[in-house]
Each structure stands twice: as C-alpha cells, then as structure tokens.
Length: 372
DNA sequence: GATTCGTGGGG
DNA sequence: TCCCCAAGAAT
Image (cartoon, rainbow, N blue to C red; front, side, top):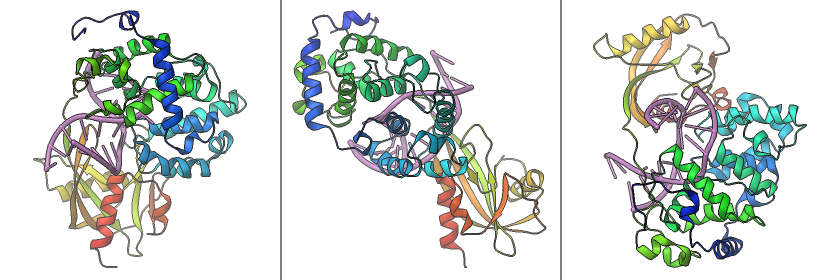
C-alpha cells in the first residue's frame, strides 16, 4: 500500500484496478438496494437541483420533509423564480446554511430569464449558477442528464480512499481534484447516474465513516483497504480549529398592546436576512449587560426600552462559534418607527417570519415562562 | 488555502 | 458531555 507521504497521479491509483467489474458490481447493487427517496421519483432537473442543494452538508432524514414541502410550494423553476423571498426563506427555516436558498432562488431566476426556464446541460453553464459548485455541477449533469461527470462529495472521497487505499488528506481542497481525475477514468459511460449515486449511497449506508459494514459490501473484493484491514484508518482527514464563545444579550421587548419588536438581519454573513429579537454581543469590562442592551437598542433602532428580568439563559452552537445567550424581557416605552428591517408584530404574525433555530428556542422559552 | 456559513443526530 | 459529522460553496 502507498500510505502517507507522496501524492500519486490518478492513473497510478488505478493500476490493476478492475474498472468494469467494479462498475457492474456497484451499479447492480444500487439497482437492488437504493433507498426509496422522494427526489428519486423522476429526473426533473429542477427537483434534482433542489435536492442536491438541500443535501449539502445535511442528512437525508433531515432533508426529506423539507424537500417535500418545498417542491409542493415551488413545483417549477418559474414558481420559485417569481416567489416572495420571505416565503422562500420561511420554507428553508431550520435547515441551516441559508445562503443556499438565496443563491438557489437567484440561480433559478437566471435560468428562468437566460435559459427560458430550462436547466442548462453543460458543466460550463451549470457551474456558473450561484451556489452550484463542482459537486453539484456533476450531480445535476449525471443524474438529470446522464452526462459522465464526476460528483465528488464526502461519501465519494471516503469510499474511494478505502477502495484504492488513498492516504491523502480529504480535508484539503486540492485532494478533491485528485478524486475527480480518478472518477473520470472509472465512471460508467453507460450509466453515470447510477455510478455516482451508487458511490454516494454506498458511503451513506455501507461504507460509513465509523464501523463500515464491509461484510455486506457489494464491492469489497475490489477494496484495497478491506484487503489490508485498514478501513478504519481511512480516509485521512485533519480536524478543524476550535470554536469561539460569544456572550449575547437578547431582549424580547413588548409594547403595551402586546406587540413584539423583531429585526431583520443583514443581507450578508451569519443567518443573513433572517429575523431575530434585538440582541448585542456583550463586551465584558464595560457596563452591565442590561445597560449595553438598552443602549444598543436605542442607538440602533431609536427605541426606548426598559430591560427587565432574565427569562432564560441558553447556548446555541454553530459549526464555528457558540452563542451564550442571556434573554431579558423588556417593555417598550415610547413609540416605534417601523421599517423594512424593524417591525412590531403580534404573536400570531410571528409565525410568518423566518427565524434561526436559536431564536425559535428562546421564543419558546419565553412563551412557556411568561404569564399571558 | 483557510475561514465562514447551521443544524440535529450519533458514538 | 463532547465532538464529529452530512450528498459543499463562497469568500
């Protein structure tokens, strides 16, 4: 085996590899064992596209209900192209990585206008669409159009690392290109769709990150790691840096007629364009958190509020940082000048705004702890 | 190339 | 509890 150290050319990894036997075993297994998933009902390029965006860094079980309701609400390119952005974000609420759906709608509008509503079928055109990178380009081309393009995701890198005993760090962007080169040489030209999906399906249900089910694997006779007994050491993946801890003071502010103040986040960055309750990062060593929150709300929104008791404290972990939130109930004293990004809404009206999970949680705490 | 972008599940 | 992760892309 090659082990760590040098980086080989793609053709060096597939010396003596039984390409045709592998293709046949993989594809026939996929035909037998593939899961019954809602985006596999047909090959509508739009629905393939939507599913691939949703599945980015997201589990299948999580995606299924979102996919079903999304394609029901927005069944076609045109329906999504002309949809209200607020409703689109609401349909994505809780799914995370919200720029995915903003980019999707933007790209769908591009297809609607520049391609007459037809998803293009060349790598050049597809990969220019917002939110469509190398993986999604290959996935749409192969699954919807039967074009033999590589679709290299985490599954494919894990599976191929084991099968071909590749000891390169899959956390490095450069490594993905090595795998794409390999796929170009071994992909089935007659059924690239099932070949690509078969690799991913295998990674999802057999060749799993920990304790892979090698004895059930349809391609174990092609697998170098199984032969060497190194399947638990592969793939090589360096871990990423630790997360920052950020203290946040949040105000749930109510008017005398029971309306709540909500704010729409900036157009870029974390949780862009989602709604939230007014909040500020607490800087230690200054004044009291309640004073910082009160001053922030006055300076930012020209709203006079008196901050009251702590409703709850809760943590919310993102992939790269953690919010330590202290939630205060408060009362709005003066009047509020509402804008596109600042609104007073009733409890019922809150339902139609898209909030990140962190603020859904603190609202729930508030509702269960406060008297009506 | 390294960092930013969410969330819920599982070992 | 904690940490890793899951069908990545943009910056």
